[in-house]
Image (cartoon, rainbow, N blue to C red; front, side, top):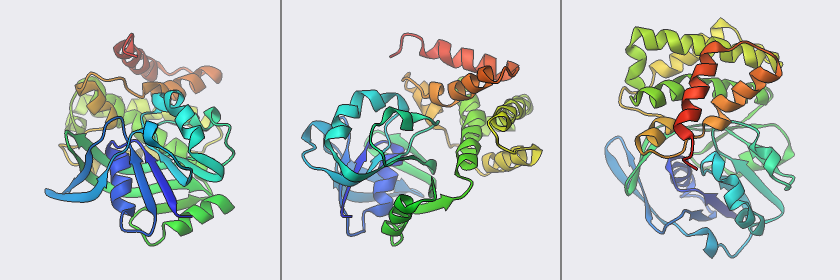
Length: 287
């Protein structure tokens, strides 16, 4: 494997580029406009030496494709993706939520649980923390893991992959909902009423996850709250930045997915119902 494409030059895509740029791969990163990719880490600007291309300029097939666009962009870019794959191309979806795999006819597609935190700001991406993608275990993903073993990108293969996906869904459910709807950063969890709302939302999420054959409990909630406690006060979430920019959010793929599974199992989720309705109202007529 030698040819790598990163589709999407927002925070996650730019940081993945930063993590693998010193490898032997031939890497192309695609965005809606042509611009240089610069990373800021701990106040220091780190030029990557890469400039984006537009998908209309994609003229070859790739061995690995990272898809890091917003989840609702998949259908729009699918024709471009189909022209960039060969029989053995490995597609790694690095988006919030779950279930986007179903949109692909290609057989080697994996939805990663993504632990990479950053913020796109004008001509740079601020890299906050983390460098991990979690994938299921099989021969294809073992090949992927081996390919990136000498880079800073940490590919984790998990036997409990679906639990990892649900855990990340729950992580996003709590903090993304609260930062987005309050239009405030991670510091919002210091407000006691907000903290209680987050806990109630997580309890409902755990109930839905367990109906989906997971085995979460109060310890799971404590683990998630511990993750939140490690966030810098000034750190936002992707949904928070979307709200600030008055852009569409990925609520359908996070809150909406959990909401739909709750309806399927006939579960009462009053807090989630309100959160989902408010996010749906924000998005109404925006796409």
